[in-house]
Amino acid sequence: MKSQARDSESSPPPGEVLSPRTLRSEMFLVLALSLGASAVSALISFLGSLTAPGSLADQAARMNTSRAPDRPWLDLAWQLFGVATALVPVALVAHLLTREGAGGLRAIGFDRSRPAFDLTRGALLAAAIGGSGLVLYLGAVQAGFNLTVVPESLPHVWWRIPVLIASALQNAVVEEVIVVGYLLRRLGRTTQFSPWAMLAVSAVLRGSYHLYQGLGGMVGNMVMGVIFVWLYRRWGRVGPLVAAHALIDIVAFTGYAALEGKVDWLPTP
Image (cartoon, rainbow, N blue to C red; front, side):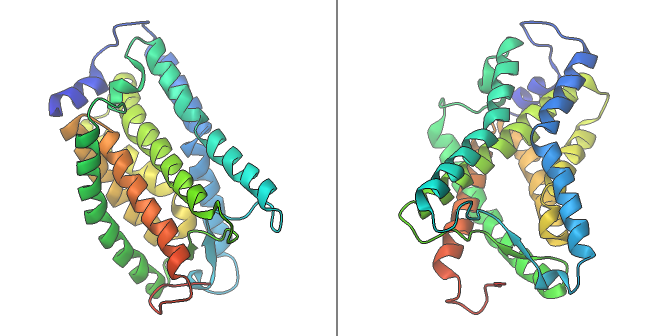
């Protein structure tokens, strides 16, 4: 599995042969439509928080917010629209990998060929990272390095939990497919970067689009990025990473919904 992941980053595709310049342009366009744009947005948001009155901990970074308060059916339509459109870059990546003859997302190990492997390792990884991530977040808020993260503020309607789960799944698929599988594959074929340099690029990108949460969110996600790239190269699959990320976000989103205002240790605005 270890060699399989490295081969997917460096070996030429069996299908359509594209120049390194074309592949670089493709990579930049994919990132500009997805997580690269999110990184720029996060930087602007963080600069706004730094220059706002009060400490970072006094401000809130809100996720999964209502798009049409007091209009639940319209709100649901907006929520589903947001999840669906966020997945378009993943569909684009699948198309590009298929075009080059790599077998689509199977080339990066995102398929249904090994569900037990993906789910069991994903669950173990989520358990290991989720707890340490929560401790890091609480410490960063106390130290004033992080905004208070509000994972959800949806109305208390029947679709609240299903939408939170759908949002978690969407986050996991977009991030792991693009920032691990696709990005490493393209960097390995279009640059002279060493494996360590490619790991650093992936980890820094992951941290940068979480900067809207504060420095704690950025650093914590960079560490997570290092671990995820190392495991991807070891296992040859992004499937376990998607499973782990989805479980972490599902627990965070639904856990906040269940515990908000009921426990003293959970920061709230």
